[in-house]
Image 1 (tube, rainbow, N blue to C red):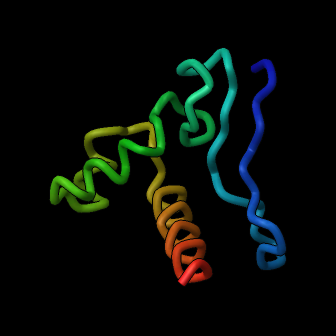
Image 2: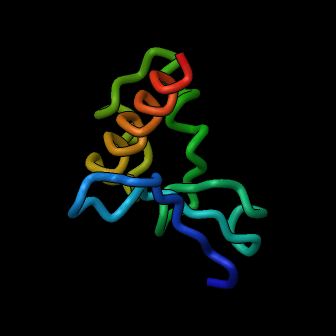
Length: 84
């Protein structure tokens, strides 16, 4: 899997392995994807903006795991709230 990197939040809670995202130049041209898939993370936010629910998105992308999607949403919320 080349230079794959897992995005991990600094100082995350104990027992939390990190945010389930990876970026590898050999997978989707290095775009950030959900780890172990070829689903770019922006697909999640684009589909939510289009009005789909998390369950509908997961149904559309069967390689996604609900816990990974929710982890990304929690982390995005945390990062946005820190910038306020």
